[in-house]
Image (cartoon, rainbow, N blue to C red; front, top):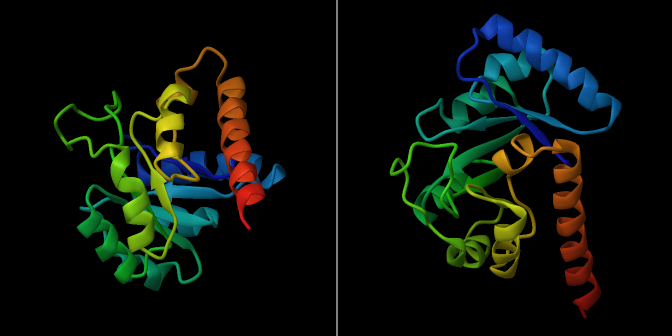
Length: 185
């Protein structure tokens, strides 16, 4: 994996700091940046590379004041939300759900589909990470629609061999990146 996001909606802030701190130590040994979901205090305490915010979390401006050099990403579900996040100073956006996903309550957010990936990447000047229902099978559709990266959860964590699943995703994404680079004039 190129980046790992720590997300825990049930533990207390002190417990998240302790757990995320251990995770960061492990990731640091492999040169993999850590992003913390929702809590700028946790990100600051563990010296994470970044913070990821949802639509109802603190503002990018508030997070930037607390974490001036960190990556700050935002979950977005429409082109307008992605534009607003970019205009507010986000470093990247997560965009989706691209496909149906089992990690969110069904119907909470409508599936946006992969067709919006390329237009969105042409609209916002920051990286776009398609998210939601990304599996090795659906990754190809996201890549064909213009994605060069993706956020993956269940397809790795629920796999019988999470390490092997992560490796397969990385290889597929790296292969696609090399093919794009090789075909560039």
